Length: 610
Image 1 (tube, rainbow, N blue to C red):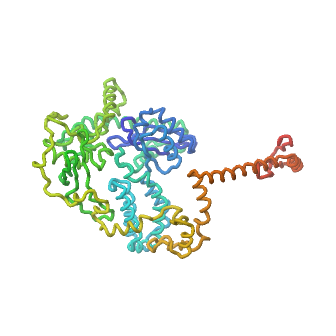
Image 2 (cartoon, rainbow, N blue to C red):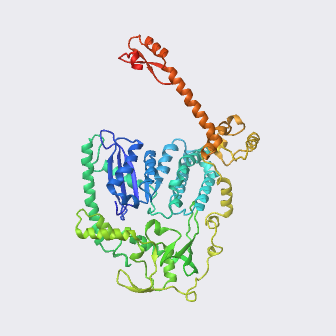
Image 3 (cartoon, one colour):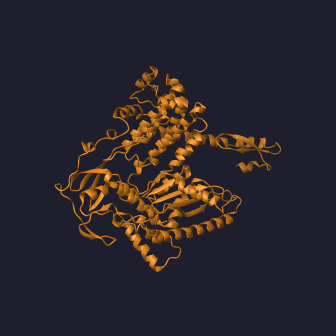
């Protein structure tokens, strides 16, 4: 857990014991991209206090406070008890972490729950088109969770183009106007409300290895219930514990063998300096990165700043927006860092820094171990998966732990002659402008920086501007019906009465449902305005509003106290005793609401009420 604890996966499952107790599991992902369960806990119930106790007491006690400080991302599904408990524990223990929602639960499970029964193709001949539209919509939403959308401006453009596509004539002809309305409502109510927890640009520079779903952890859940020795709902707690322990022991043996093979095997398909020391996945990513270095062009702005952009266009017929970005590579403390934040997210160098090293530095032959995070080192995988720990292995783990505190932060630029891990020697040095010039200056470099609208390659600026003007101010939530934009009450009433505050025809949802604010009687805004405005003033610290609410509260307390004291007076008690003469019945005191009768076997006396 401590070796690969940057991302923590959390989920609970049912059906593992006969007492119907939930099983909560925590897992991490190794450098072989395999899930390892680090904690399993059978909880008494699914109440919020249980999750809070688990996150605030159990995890720091079992894994230590250092592990809690190491976690960067906690990935959960849609369970509100889990999410609320994680948010509360962040303030005390997971101070360096952020919470992320599972994209698969939001999109795939949300579609199945809210749209499968209400959205369908208009005719049997449109089934393939409907499946294509559904796949396009889901992929579009998933793109907001991936590195295809890096900045907030790109996200706003992509979102506005998404609604333009959703309300287009082609989609209406295949699934109908009501189908478009239901999908828009689904995105508005069940997707965009989680925007701060799934949007990629919110975690651009956070180490999370491009994870955006909880499905790898869901796989461990299925494995423990559907493997050759599963945990069954008919098992007692003891039997379930024995089965899960047996599964963990088998998994640990398999993981130790795989890590040993990974540590000892030779990658004959690679001749780089890093192939002997990193895992197979890391080496394949590095080779792919090196193959893209020549696809970029660069412009040297100063001795420590470079502009990099793709010079070879990628052909794509996708409806999803594609952006021709200009990346800024700067050198700080002899280390190259890129604005794409690929190294911060994954611990591996990006092709933009590789291009700068190859074109602007002398003697660069490829990435070295200094440029790669310790997370990807095969010796770390081997040391962390050993069952029997020796003194030598403890020393290695201690050294790796110290090195992780000073982990790689980018591609390092060294001075003089340097000997790297494979024994070869070469020299780094900045090239002068006279020795190197770009073969041409790409148009994308001119007038840098530009807005995202200027470098979208598969949509015109006119189309983006139109979609932004139509859907950027697309309201989400109850405010869409109840709170029109207005500077005064008279202006709001005039807008409503003159039908000026209406959605255009492109908003199919409100046209089809005939939701029109034609009068004040059917507007929630005018019904709730006074209460909302007074409450907002109270929250903002308005003394008049606070005194008003304090007075109302004191009056209410006095009235309730008077009513309670009157209800328990002697006359009421006598009436209770007189009513209790009926066999098998007794009057019980229920508080300010008065008296009620309930059937009980034992008849209480008048002294019991006193």
